[in-house]
Image (tube, rainbow over all chains, first blue to last red; front, side, top):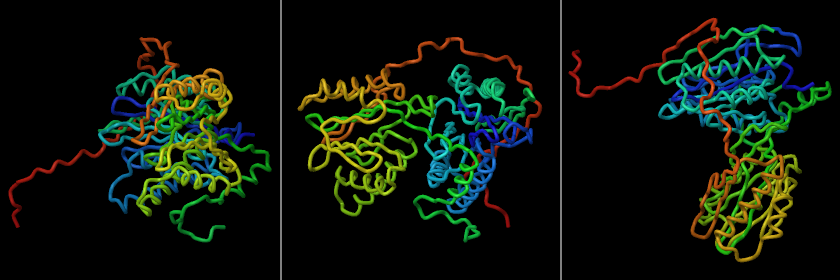
Length: 204
Length: 273
């Protein structure tokens, strides 16, 4: 049994024009049994930085708590929010520290950096960063997500079009994965607002 | 369990906290995850004025390509660069760490870094972890003693060579080097040969692909040619693309406006007491 397939997850982040979208599925399962259909995988670090964790849910929660702690310490010392690039380095260092006994999580980080430039990044479970200019995916549905995003992605999409694209990519990919699904949770972040939407998907 | 209640920021190095738990899971039949590898073809050669390093740009996670354009030529010092193959996190972490150590050493000594310094720091670290830090590196640079090219294996052994290849595509690239390499190549001949070797890796090895990155290091400076050659462009994209009419069913929408930037206007009236 694969450890990443214990809880099941699907995460995707995409870059648009001065905005980004980060989306996840809502299922929490214990192997083939579903135990929750409203599980939050994406968390807010600060207004312009969101991150999602796929993989083992218990490690995801622990890692989230450690990262929020580190960010709060940073805010106290620096009197400002962390930039997305800095946060990605922090997550990478925390994961690599556990190189020989890793957290079974794959994070997806998305934020607006300086001059409202969107930043997305994903890592494997030991912190190997992958910075992408278009989209990043993680989770049990990642293979389908790669295919869907590769074909549906377009450069410089406006927030509404970006939302439609991310939702279609997510919903079509989780339909082909038993371990994720039960709806979707999409955050579209622009410099002026954060739009959080819950999608209706197949409940199987 | 843990001694301290408050989790202080760690002092550095590896932490083995979760090893017991992971071993317990392994005994229960849970197989450990696969890490991102850089399948890779990395090469280096010495030409008449210095060193040329080359790498492909594909990162794989099992059979899936997770990054089509990653950077495998890492900065170590202004005159030293290092290509990395093996587990991606290990190559990145080890080159970052040694790069910082070299910077501190430069401040300490007030001199330009030497390639053998980087070599020793890397091989000591890798040997220390007995091959578990899975990083295979091609290190090249030009210092006061001249141009140098070394290969470093995950267990800590090193070789000093005039031309070197590492990674899953190393055999394909070495075939090109062995037939066409000669001493005293010019810069253009060197770049052409390195490009050919990487292309042979890209086209013949499944673990390597996408584009060719080149780094030319000479006494005068360095030239990082990112995506020097792109032999695999995406030509099949439909010009229309996908456009979705607003059909996604939304159950709930929550809009949170972000704080507006406060504008400070100078020169107002003085406040009344």
